Image 1: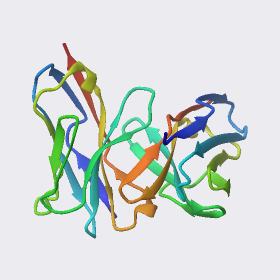
Image 2: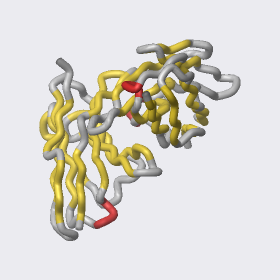
Image 3: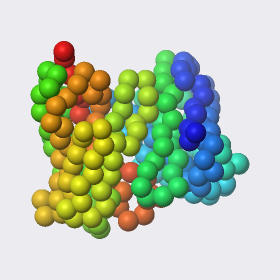
Image 4: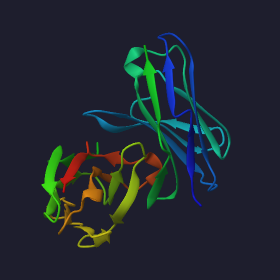
Length: 111
Length: 113
């Protein structure tokens, strides 16, 4: 059963705190992604990972960093979170150009 | 850069109505086109895709035809049900899938009994 998991599902942080969002996949996909979803802006690509320790900026990487030490895990890190980083974050993985598998999302609120 | 435009932001329908969501794209290459559907509390999931001009993608009664001439990939369904209420995203992948997908802004479809 192909699956992408995300933890936590909901998170409330204060401005300036550090945030760690975790993503896992059980499909051995090499490529993984982080997107954020905002009303009126759709889904925007933050970072891409091609494999362990091989990461690339997406369209909106500012304020974020990522870590991928195992193929099945991909983390999104916000150092000193800002209120404008309140959003729903989606992780995805893919094996080919034909489909990306998305996780259920993490709703982050930064107060 | 690449872009996807969905004309309708929200659509409200009654059951058994005909649904059309317009999607136009702009890409430098020959992209693969996708329709994704997102239900409340879930991530987007692939509805179907098309990779060549005139190719028709279809799933669960939804269909769309890749039209390179008009750079369009309009989503249609002949008779919607309340369970089709969701947000629909048109997306494209241009040449290198590892660059991620470019999504439209999404269309919220609400179907009323």
